[in-house]
Picture 1 (cartoon, rainbow, N blue to C red):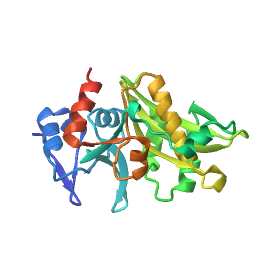
Picture 2: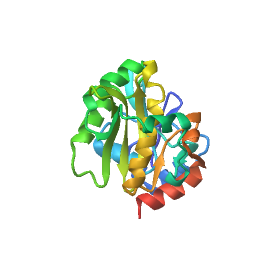
Picture 3: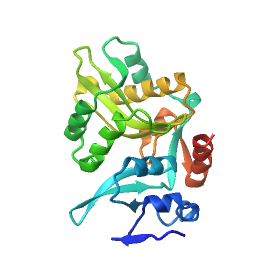
Length: 238
C-alpha cells in the first residue's frame, strides 16, 4: 500500500496514492475516514480524484490552504425518472421572466458566490484551478459545467458549477439571489438543470452530500459509499 502522511488527524494523499490500486481500495473500504488532505492543485490530480469518486472542497490548516478530497460515507443521487417538480417551481416554469442556460460566466459566478456564501470554500488556488479546468478543451472526458438563471435584464440570479465525467454530472456549489422576488429560483435552476441533463442523455446527477432535504425533495435517492462506487465506477469506466 502506498505511503499516507498524517496531518492534523487527516491523512495527506497524493496522486501516487490514488493511482495505486491497493491504496485506493483501502481508502474505499475504510469506513472510519472520509476526508483527506492534499496541497496538489494540479489539473491531473483533481481530475483523477473526481474520476475515482472523491468530491473536493478546501480547508485552511495553520494558515496553509489545502484541497480537501472527500470519499463520502453516503451520496444523494438523482435519477431523472424520479425528478419531482413542486407546485411552486411548476408555477415558475410557466412564467416568462427568466432565461436558463448552460453558461460560461465564471467571473460573475464567483462574485455572487462570495457575496452570498461568506464561508465559501471555492477560493484561492481552488478558484484558479476551476478557471484553468474551464479553459481546457481536451481533458479526457472531463468538463467543468455551469448552469444559470438570468432575469430579463441579464442579471445573474441563480447559478451552480459542477463537472461532467462520461455521462455523469456532479454538483460542486452554487448560489441564489436572496431577494424575495426570486424565492424558489434556486429550486427552479436545479429543476431545469435536471431536465437539461436528462435531455442530453446523462445517466444520473451526483448531488453529493445527502444531508440537505431539498435534494430529496427534488427526487434524489440515498446511496451508501459501496452502492455509489459500484454505480459510479461502472458508469465512468464503461
